[in-house]
Length: 171
Image 1 (tube, rainbow, N blue to C red):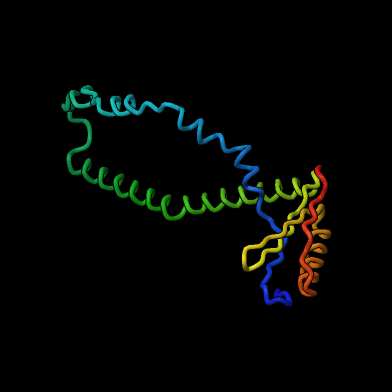
Image 2: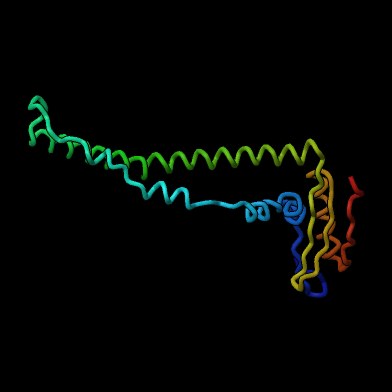
């Protein structure tokens, strides 16, 4: 939308949360994470130990088992089955699982957002931003009221009037 003085304005209802408020409320996790001492030495030490019991067992048999040809075939078939199962999991099952998890997260966030906006009457932010960086912000309770306020601001800009910053009273 362009005002009579050729200033280009964008008027919209903002969906995004107020990041500064969220950062103040939930931003302390970074400080806590840096203070936590992670001791990776224990993991490396236990991984470096090799148990000799696995390599010191006797290899003898009493002749009742498979012969060498049957053992090789069984090992090859098991190896191929593991490779096919891993490929099937990696290229089919894992992507499907991730899509389902993503959809569930989106649905939960959508329900929480709607509940927050509707039940708790959280105001919508109507924002008019000029091309030169000038910004006018208005908070309005109710979706339809926010759309009406957006249209009012756009119409006042078309007529050449600068929109007045009207913030709703504190909740």
